[in-house]
Image (cartoon, rainbow, N blue to C red; front, side, top):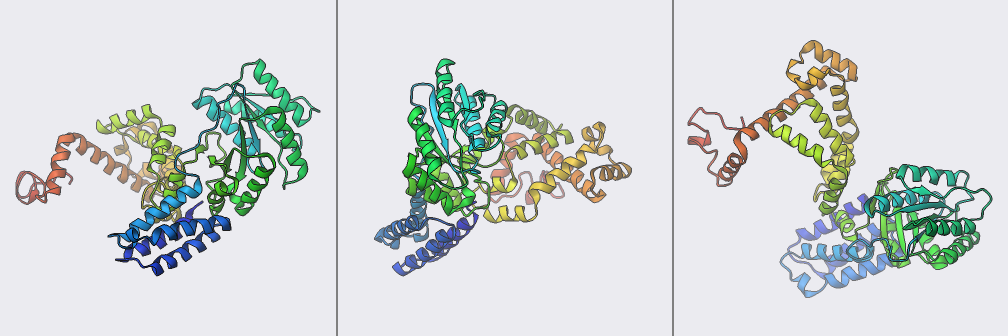
Length: 470
């Protein structure tokens, strides 16, 4: 969602980096570009002014203007200012420091993703924090809202408050807290009703619920796709009922990103969590320094490692690695590996978390690699017999035609897949044959400029010999 903002910021900092020295005029010109980029991204005007003034003030100091690499110095200042605007370094956890059952009040407009987010938080607390969670729907306005939360609770493997028709939201909240106390729940999540727009009736209802439950957290759920409207919503809720934290949904969308940059300054409340999909596990902690890094094209390696740890099956990964190193890797294993990668999300999304991969990410998106190549490979392998998947060498012309017809592809595509797989298998066998020491010897020989060890011209065994990697 920060793509356009990231492109503009990277352009500005890249231009500054090309200059040997910086003048105040250079900084002023760069800040004009930054101001325009932020306004176009729907960042609130007071936040833009404060951000630009901070960066300008720090950038015209002698230590920057006389620096050996002023472009890098300004990049560091912009990065620090972005982190400040987003709420300061480090994720802010949910506050559960209260006598159980801890009430968490979910507020926001209709359609912001409040009910789904309640289910996501319940799953997160139950699996990561080992908490006993009760979900309660206080939404008597929207048809089937209570039933929706009940179904989400079943999917998350947590309890939901039984539905009793005719009760008011305040009565449901009181019953939820009583049930939580009586049945030993650690956390009670109260999902309030939303409206299509902010009105006094909604605010009064939320105030009454707040007064009878005394929540440890009042989480405002806002849709990142609504841009400046999300900021206005946050301001209204904060003034009316007080907000302790913000959850931004649809962070995987193509919004302009300004709402996230404005939220902390407008409400004073930190963004605690972000949602990026409909699945119940698609909820992440908000790390301002990581988001700043992604905006400036510095990547988010820590986020990528966390995502891998959360989504990848370690035992499956180790099994595949052993088979690869033993040279026994077959097409069934290749499909298993593709599924592991797909669990982490789209390839363009993964590339976006790596430093300096912006252009490559765009190329992947343009060629639609995320949705086509992997699926086509899986379709072709699914059209093969068990024997063909175990021993691809037996696949000749007639078999290729059958596989292509069965998977809706061409013989050329089947040939390409088999060639790629054969190259991978050959490489793994050579790596296994050389061993770690052999690889290290070759790497050191290449780095020292001596060519491949073993004979004249770097070819093992003398002239005419073949280099180990063919």
